[in-house]
Image (tube, rainbow, N blue to C red):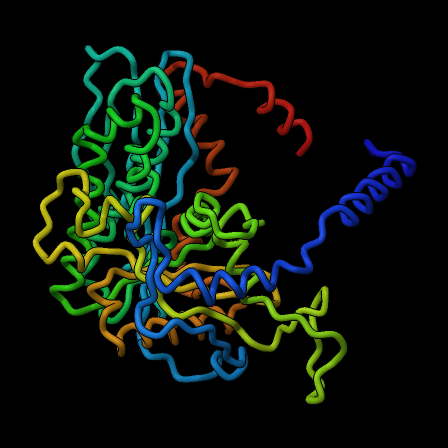
Length: 426
């Protein structure tokens, strides 16, 4: 016990003080005003369109039980995810992260579930040491692995090996098993590798890395993935469990609007916009959640066409890292809508390329499919949850793999105090 009762009481007093000073009662009105007045379309400071409605700009609601029990637009749904052991630095100077990607199907396809793509991204300052290996098959062809050497940097080595391992494993596995997807593919996360696409907007070292072959080839994988699915007339989308975009609130804050924008990111804005509260109990007997939040319906927005932020690199006037696009450039652009799940008080974002979103029937089918899945599970779609479970590397497995690296490399892992601190507390 690190807090005595007197400390707990003091923190309660602190919270009460903050509650008195921070009044969010008008935030609903601010959110409604932004929705009504500034998103059709939203212009940036230079006059360019940041986001604009695709179809009718609407706020919608659907009974959670009804949509969960409704027939699914897609009979078979596939999910894709990639998990890592997290970046590890060794005493011999090697920095490595290992990622594995897996694809899941609903209904299940055990043969497909067995397949894995494993990537070890490595960083070493000694450029005379040859570390690179193309794909090798193991497990009778069900698994393949490769080693990728990342460009030498003075900073960000751990961050870079993590991003390149994760996105290469995911995009390569998606391309390798694209033919297995017959109706719909849902990526666990954004449609495009946002971490890589944002490097050009960071400092000089990350900008330089963005021009290297490795990130460009990974971005190309995602471009080819869209083309492959367009060719097969099979839609794909990304399901973002933790949307972190700030392009809407950032744009509003950077322009004189006559009011303060109180939120730090778009997810907080959309949550306030879509959350519905009502005191007491409905006449039909359904109950409310905490803070009087109504929980019987999912609320969601119509679709938007995004042109700014990391999406600008994929936009029709972006250069996509110099990757050649075989379709009209506009068709690759990101379109999205957001869903608010009231029982868990969580907001999700769903993305698909404009080539699929421009079709009213396809757009509505994706919307209904994701709504039904979220309502049934009160969380991510089953295909995404399955892929996450297949690709996840558990804490024990991470520790075992790091130990295997340590023994094979004959070099210990660089330990930090927090490693000991949290190990002791578990």
